[in-house]
Image 1 (tube, rainbow, N blue to C red):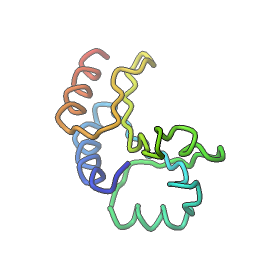
Image 2: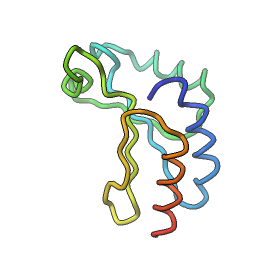
Image 3: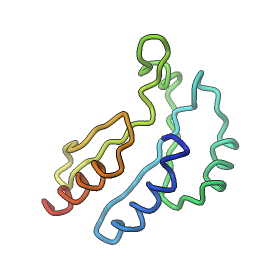
Image 4: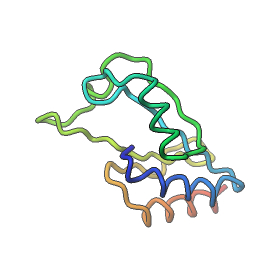
Length: 109
């Protein structure tokens, strides 16, 4: 997730968490796979986000999913509905589309 998204994602998390929304930030090690946990924790503190984070332990995940020319498909948002199925996946951040997808998913629960 891009640092420009984090304030919006935190707002979305605060707006919908009482309705069951969970946002999970997943760190894949950054470009080249060498981003340290210390760097990520400093970023979390800087952005003041409260949603949970996980660390990808597989080597080179970022590079495995890079597009041709090393253009990364990250940040990526995936929304899983209450039935466990993906209901929204996007590689470009669109707050309005994400909010609409969240509201639809929560209404379906």
